[in-house]
Image (tube, rainbow, N blue to C red; front, side, top):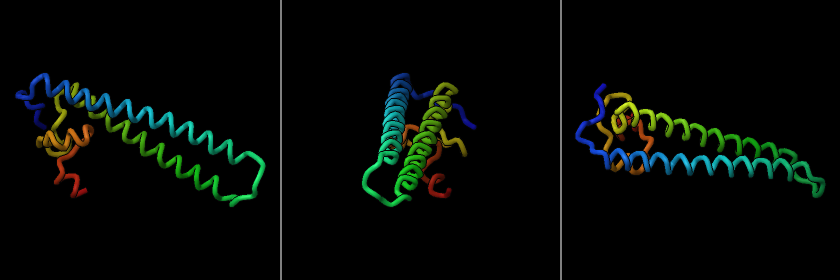
Length: 121
């Protein structure tokens, strides 16, 4: 696999780190919110009151678990991207070593594949 393009300057590396840090911060906030929402839903399900569909709390809990799982997967992708930045391979496809366009990295700083490679998955 190719090493990180040496022509990328420090500003580009700083921009990549900024994008990754912002996404990491956003994900952590979403995880905290999802955890709070899950606790609120569990508390509401345990309250006595109107009769409701008994499956409703279970469905809500499963939906919440799926959301949290997706956030954790995204968090891991960001952490892998940060490691590639440290290793000097950020911005290169983990499959082919081909450069990932800057526009794609701006839109998704954790991108691991080129658009063509991602479409074939």
